[in-house]
Image (cartoon, rainbow, N blue to C red; front, side, top):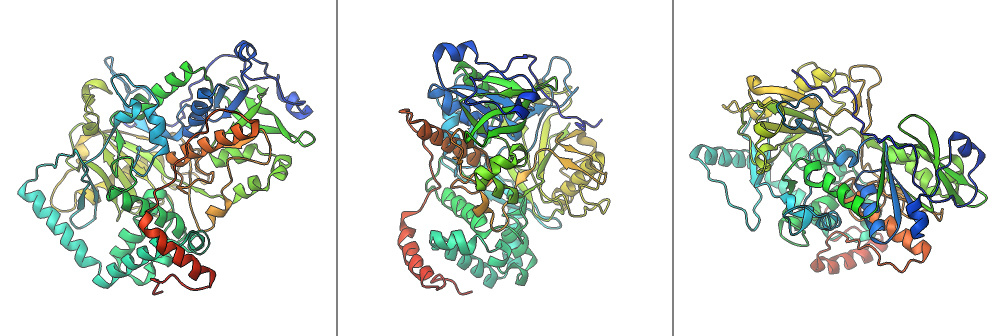
Amino acid sequence: MNRTGTSRRTFVTTAAAVTGAAAVGAVPTSAAAAGTTARTTAATAATGAPSVAVLGGGVAGLTAAHELAERGFHVTVYERRALGGKARSMGVPDSARGGRRALPAEHGFRFIPGIYHNLPDTMRRIPFPGNANGVWDNLIAPAEMSFARTGREDLRIPLPWPGHRPAELTLDEIRRALTALLQTARSIPLHESAYFVNRFLVFLTSCDERRDETWERTPWWEFLRAERMSYDYQRILAVGLTRNIVATKAEEASTRTVATLMEAFTFNALGRGADGPLDRILNLPTNEAWIDPWVTHLTGLGVEFRVGWTVREMAYDSGAGRITAAVIEDPQGARRSVTADHYVSAMPVEHARRTWGAALRAADPQLARCDKLETDWMTGIQFYLTEPAPLLAGHANCIDSPWSLTCIQQAEHWPSRDFAADYGDGAVVDCLSVDISEWDRPGVLYGKTAKQCTRAEVAREVWAQLKAAFNDTGRTVLKDGALHSWFLDPGVDGLGTPNPTNDDQLLIHPVGTFHNRPRAATAVPNFFLAGDYVAVDIDLATMEGANASARQAVNALLDRTGSPAARCTVKPLFRAPELEAHKRHDRLRYRLGLRNALDAG
């Protein structure tokens, strides 16, 4: 019955040759001994275009390849597993029947809010049949979201936006909505609500220096004085914006990071500085809607892909002060020294920093600081249903669940697909995609953390917590008999053993993280960084951050080479002009050692 995904699916090519330009400087003996040095391809030799090895094929790597290829560089992308990285979707192994596609699965559901600007710009430049604005036209806006409560009515929040058609409500739905609103209003005392509003205004009017220093070093929990407040204040206002969204504990998360995100979403909801609605998702599985068209477009631009190639080391010549090769393991397990004019490391930080040796770290101290960056588990599981479950038309945040679950039903958001006719064995009508953000807290069935559970126990535990959130006020919306199967992200391994591992962790943001994020440009003239851990304006591990960092890496490369090509546009988060005077006043107070004028402590 269950699709556990016990092994990671790797899509590899069988080509033995590696594309790259002639090495700049000599390859060190240790790197040369690792394998055969790759040679310049005929295409590069014929065009004379500078070559770039992009190491990693996730959002950062594909963005860098896109921008470089448009500017005439010869680009080869090396990806160890599958293009798209954590953003990709995948098929459940052995689930397709009768000519249908495999059941769609993913590391976690995609969320592309209106606060993003750089990623949507890239999406507009990816052609998609029938779409005037390319892949960007595949973004749709859910009509609502909810805080799914355990033991009380769920708080459903409409997400109005021009063009939305309000859903028709029954009397029972109106009754439930009003009950939830009143329960929530009563559970958070008025003085606590006023205090939270004051704290938010303090942050809104804080100058950049106060944000970067004081608030970066202040945990969100402490900033909100959450330990003194009610349970609902803690769960909704403290935890709800940290653990469930960015997989960071409220007790540790940087106030700068959390409040910057909250500020951006607030202005997005008000229609200020937004690319689109507050909440947007794709109208198809991610690879169908976005990743596959992107790879096709990049191939047309001349980008070459080597999938199944794992980067092991960046070979650095201290004498030349340059990267001389990337030592990469090919699909057959042989080590090769791939050479290019320039190198863009676009891997997640936990993988990238393993490839930086002592000499390279000594050449640029910011690389060593990356060891201080922390990652945690935020992993997806999908439940396939044989009956529609009347939850809601959007994301649900199960804020009382011990494992901090968020979820969304997908079939209704894929209007061009008949789920049962197009996927699986014909019995499945919907996919409930769930993100598990808390892996170190005991659950409700076994009294064990998610890491201590087996894969099957994780699935049963998540299902039980979902039912506790949705089946608790007189309705049975999630039925055991309607559960066809489940699929847990294959990047998780060793669950239920003393040493569980997760190959796809998420950068988290405890206090001080901002100061350890590296720049895209390193001190090594032919080496650049791209990824959601690189310093960008959004200061959050997101696809937007990955995209923006890749643009910065390309700009740095263009500057280093003196290229006349147009620089990539890197759009920052929206800054409300009416707040700038308050920030200037706060800058003076900060330099005088005074609190923000609105800060009552």
